[in-house]
Image (cartoon, rainbow, N blue to C red; front, side, top):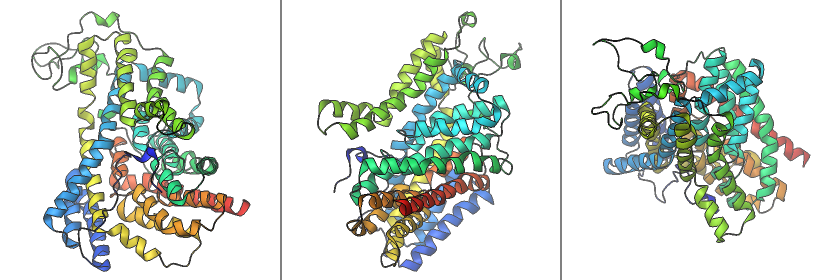
Length: 511
């Protein structure tokens, strides 16, 4: 059965090729995978090599030990980098533009002020988990991260609540919905491969998701915040800079605009500045600046969410090929939806806040340099993952599970866990595990098949680590070390996988 239309262009889907790029035996592949992952960890944690270079060198170690020809190794790595940048990279850039306008206009402060004033400190983690789960229904995980992180960072700063205490609930809400609930690629792949009922899987997935988000989000976040004292990266902190800190004159004074904004820090794209780094001429705008109203700011942030949600609804309710379905498929594509959000933000958060065209352009340009390192690291993570996949590590795990005498639910979960840990790809884990247990689904009733799809989805989220681009995305956005990311993010993903699977088993007993 062909995959549903929503999978026509999934984000960074790195499927294994028809033929692996090496003829290495199983033992050699296992050793290669272990040494490649170990090389990445040691280079970053011990040798203090930048993660971007560490991932490239780790992929080289993996390829050499697995006897992959140098030309094939390079081709595989660059294909993974290109796939990741083409999907996740563009979304990160567009999301950063919205975040930059939201911060510089004061819109982020307005949203945070409303949240802080209406929700007490003890309830903030629960509020963040709920907001993330709601936004995570139609959003890819990466999109949700780039839209929510600016709010999370600013709420943490304004309330003095530990970053991990509200960051983990937000990540949990996004991750659970991404792995368990359609129309995300993973659940849809499992539903398509197993011929499961989409509506039933959606309903059961939401039932499993609620307790899973609670346990892996607010509950775990309150615990891990004691052991991971994270501090938000200053370059990514979404707040306007205090003009008082930059007051001064003379040759040694730092050049700033009248408000001390990020506008003067743009390196290359200050229109009319005459040279890189020259301040934007916003003379006279200090009295014209006005903070955007709460609802226009919220609508701007939610526009991409609504467009993608409409696409998901269209896939469930409209016949394929109709004009309405084609329109929603286009406007609900993540890149198009975020681009629409950027354009709307230029008006609601830019011009309406008193910026002129040059200043709006400068804010957008100034939002990109802080994410350059994140883009490179995430892209290199995609390249490392692709080398693992192309070498046949995923096939190795799948072959080992084929003859196992286990229940379909446990088998599907274990295969997905193995491939997820080995390759870092939740989508590859889901595709492979669903393909292995698909014959068993033919003899199962409708609720059992839906639960099998959810079990595979839970397994595909198990223990994200250095071979997963999402690991590096979280690490860089929250300013964590590799060890802190494993303690927080990787453990959170494992809790999601285990708690979610226990929920599936409980539903299996009741249905």
